[in-house]
Image (cartoon, rainbow over all chains, first blue to last red; front, side, top):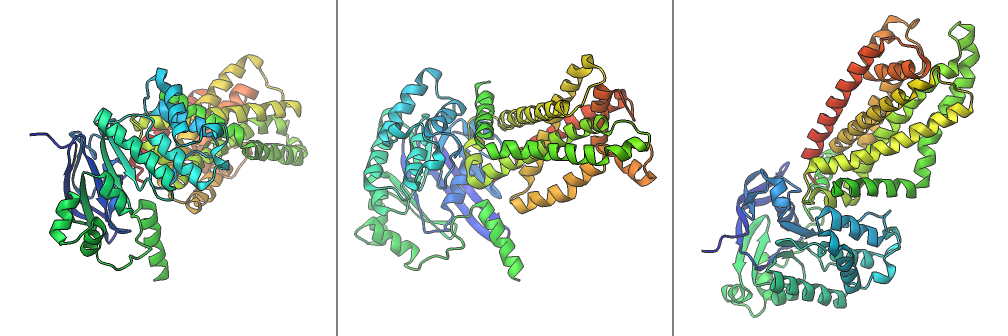
Length: 269
Length: 248
């Protein structure tokens, strides 16, 4: 039997009184493309943050490539790469310098620095603007640069946290084609979140849907539609998570956001 | 090694590209030097304490290192708020290395600023007692900047917002500076001040600088170096401990 490359066992994460992730368990196998779906504030980003060693779980176990992310962080970090949901670029460096910084810090072999940076910057159409400071970039350009940067080193597992948020259709296509290629050619495991269900339907082999911190369904698109007796993933998703719009305040249980939200609550009494 | 270099390189690029920061951080100590040096010089001399500018320069160098190191810590806070810290923290590099690369950047910046302040002081008439002791003074400056940059990094890792950092600055850094022997000699001050200054590690740092630059000492160089060495160890452990705990 193949051992899972990502494994969550009964994971809980609480921020004060808020339970962001509530006894979540799932497994992702090597070479899979796995989509993690859920409404705003469902616990997607918190789960990714725990998997990528940015947050520590309150209880439960998370294994990446067999390494416990809470105990053996350094080894776990060697296994993955990530495209963050929120901006994580250095504004006072040029786009090229941001790429170079990443290449060195993430251990891209020295001989491949220039070729890979050029290839990826051309892929997202930023090569011409490589020497501009990121400070001068527009929102869309920054997003593209982040994606190019995330694809620069070739880890065993790639996390993509809402990578296509705010991207135009062209760039979305480019991104998924490239990700598919990495998956096919290098057997890279892909774990992504998105709000675009068509994307999940097309790209993902397996899908988990999380709501209110709990996994409510898991399986292929076919299994999910069969289970909910619906015609499309979108219909299945809405049936599972309800039609109501979620509270904006709880969007993304970002450690900082939650702490300041709690503080504001306390101030308001 | 490459990783540490690239972290340092990014700090330096950032520093050199934000001119306002360069002028701001050098301007403040120079203002102190001129306003206090010239403003209080005559009184100091009449009280039989000698040349105040000579006495003041080591204190101002320490001020440069202290504020530069602690304000450099804000960089970590910036990185936390604007996301770049994530990029560094999830890298397949031990966190200690991430901290070290960044702190070496902060240390280099502090040293550059201290040297600039020293040159400006020399232009205004400061003369070291014994030029051959200057390399020793420089070594002490290097150790102090690493200590204070680590201290700043540790503090910044603990707070989540700029208000928190401001509070630390007002209630910890300013008192530490003013209650040290940076600005006045401890020989004739009231007991309360003397006791406070004697438990303040910064006093020993100034004292060591004063010994190597103008051959004056209150505590003796041996004790100074012992305190500086311990402060280095404590600050580095503090920074590593706090930095390892950052969650974002």
